[in-house]
Image (cartoon, rainbow, N blue to C red; front, side, top):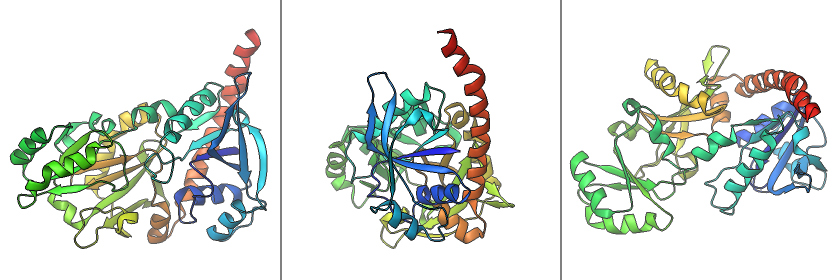
Length: 346
C-alpha cells in the first residue's frame, strides 16, 4: 500500500500525535508512507497534483520519538511524487492549529478534490470535510443528541438565549481545540458584550446550553467507517477531565485523559449520527460526548487514540491499518475496472 498523509507542516508534528502512530504502524507493516505538507503541493500544467514528500529511512521503529527524529532530519527520504499514484491519501491537516496559515485548510481540500477525481481514495472525503469546516455542520445532526444552541453575531440574541436556558457556553463557530471558549453565568453576564466582541473578530458565535454533566469532563469516542472503533473486544475511547477553574476538557488546554467507558448511551448516540457520517465519507471520526449529548465532532484530526491504546492495552492503530488495506484492495480493483476503462474510451 502506498499511503500519503497531508499535514500542515512536517516540522510542526509531535511524536504523541495520532497521525504519527498511524504512520508508524503502516511503516512497520511494510507499507510505503509519505508525508505531504500542504505547502509542498502543486498542480502541474497537465492537471496532476505533485508534492515534495518526506518519508522515514527505515521500518523498524520502536519509539515514535525516533520515528519523528528521522522524519524531521536530513536523513529523511525526500521525493517529488505524483499524488494520484498513491493508493490512499489521508487528510490530517488541522484547520484550527493556530500555528498554521489560514489558507492551508481550504487549499488542502482543493488539492484533495483534484486527487479524488483520479480514483485515488481520499479520507476523510474532501467533499464532506468542506461541509464540516465550522460547527454549523454539527447542527445538521438529529436534535435529540445535540445541545440547544443559538448561532449569531448579535449580543442581544445571545443574552435572550442565556436568560431562557440558563448557563451557556460561548465559542467561535469556526475553530476548535478549546480556543475562545467562555462560560456565561448570572455573575458574569455583564461581560457578555466583551465576550461576544472577542469571538466575533473571527466570525460568528455559537451559544450552547451548558450541560451539568460537563463537570466531570467529556468522553472522546472514535468511530471508523461509521461504527464504534473496536479491537479485541475493547472500544477506543478516552475520558477527558477538565482542570480546576476551567470549562475546557481539551488535553492541550489542560485536560487530563483517563480511561473512558462506553455504555449503551454512547452506542445509541453513535448509531444516531452514523448515517450522516457514512453518507459524508467520514472514515475516522472523534465524537465528544457529555452526558446524553454530543458536544463536538472532530472529522479532521481526531486525536487521543494513543491514550486509548494505553488505557485499553490493545493497538487500535492496527485495526485502522487493517481497514485501509481492505480499502486499498477495493480501490485498486475499482481503478483497474472502471477508471482506466473510462480513460481508454476518451
